[in-house]
Amino acid sequence: MIPRYSTKEMEDIWSEKRKFQIWFEIESYACDANASLGIIPKEAAEIIKKKGKFEIDKINEIEKKVHHDVIAFLTNLSDNIGHEARFIHQGMTSSDILDTCLSIQLVQASDLLLDSINQLLHSIKKRANEFKYTVCIGRSHGIHAEPTTFGLKLAQAFAEFSRNKDRLVSARKEIAICSISGAVGTFANIDPRVEKYVSKKLGLECETISTQIIPRDRHAAFFSTLAIIASSIERLSTEIRHLQRTEVMEAEEFFSESQKGSSAMPHKRNPVLSENLSGIARLIRGYSLPALENVALWHERDISHSSVERIIAPDSTIALDFALKRLNKVISQLIVYPEKMLKNLEQLGGLIFSQRVLLALVKSGISREISYEIVQKNAMSVWKGGGSFLEELKKDPQVTQQLSENDLNKLFDIKYHLKHVDDIFENVFGK
Image 1 (cartoon, one colour):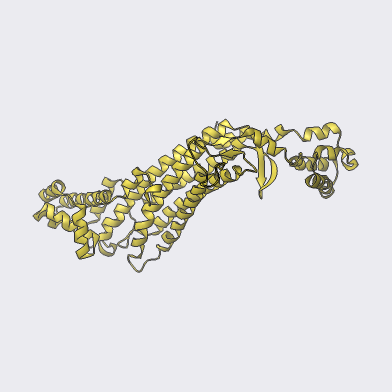
Image 2: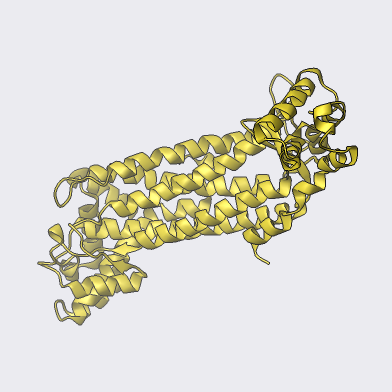
């Protein structure tokens, strides 16, 4: 991932240095296990642990000759360790190192992502409570529907990201897997107890059954989870983009004094952060498809998945972490305009109360079909010609025969739509 969309903490997880450190830990723990089983001398395991070091530049030089990254790494280790290096990688295969390392990196990346989600949840909850009773128009198909509150909009986002957090916790558990079973996964040349020892040391679970590799359905589930989280990011950022449109202007991203919106038009204040998030979300979703295609490999293994994962693993986690942090900033600094929300709510002259009138007429004894026709006739008159929906209803004898003026006035009380806000908040945030 390019530096523009990277955080240092997440970048470090995918650095060459971190990768080779993990490779050495796996090899060293495997040596400890083999030594405890009497397969290699304990002294050799101690020397390997003590002298084991690597030089990234030299590893890269060796790889240019041997065209195999794990062999290049082991060769460089051997050069530094000496004679005892012959006990490294006993009965193991490259996938034991590569797959277990990838699991560790994905687990570490998950921890950073979960921390970012927690920060976002905190900001959403704070702003939701701030605007709990701030009335605004709810829209369906982009058209004014009925009143809601801006707090409820944010409460929905909180619930969605809470589910995303649960999904990521589950995906983290599914990917926290160690596999050290040797060629084609039969443990023919390595004791299964080595895998158990190494997995415990690394905080992983042993693969139930590997085929030399960790089955890629686990990884497909992981990257699909990232894609879902990215989609939730886009859903919220798209809402902000719509609310910032000039014709709406109910909320907008923070705009600093020195910030510029356009190279040509000095008046512009654009929702660039939210637009950026929509773009990043598309990218992360795109990574889920090759992860799904990686599931179907040839026989016990091939490496068609390898090139894919070298790209999508760092890029998707780095991009998602950046996106979560950016969204957190957008929400925590979001500028909200309650007065404009109220003005927009009143834009259709009270048509947003049409369902209440419909239900009142039905309750008075008129069939639903006839009630709908009566309400729609008056509503369309206001829709096309403007004016007050309430006043149109008061002039319609079909309405006034069933509902008094006082009855009609009560149907246009905005507080009616807020009566269950507390209940919804309790469902979302608890008591």
